Image (cartoon, helix red, strand yellow):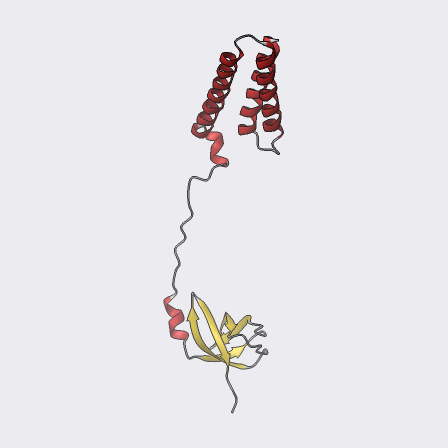
Length: 157
């Protein structure tokens, strides 16, 4: 019976190590846990001095899993799984956009609330301040916020 318990503990340890290296649905992890618990139960029921053997089995299993994790983290194969860098994207402010404040132009497409405008022959993307503006209507740039142009319809009065 001790050989069965040792085989189950070895199979359980291998399954738990495989769970670390092979991404999946936890099949290896579940099999490893069931196998390890079965080995502990068989050891307790059928082997003399079972407390010492169970302690040795648990220490062996934890040591093997720890060694596998340590090797996994230092191995190149973890580079594709574990993100080690952060992306820091700088916001670039376009200085020329401030010059557009107060300029008037025409809508190239309807702004609902996003679309294209024409300012002195230059076509740009812009947002209305929430209202629907038809294509061809006169607009005025009222705000520049986070590199976005906000416009308002100019009344023809």
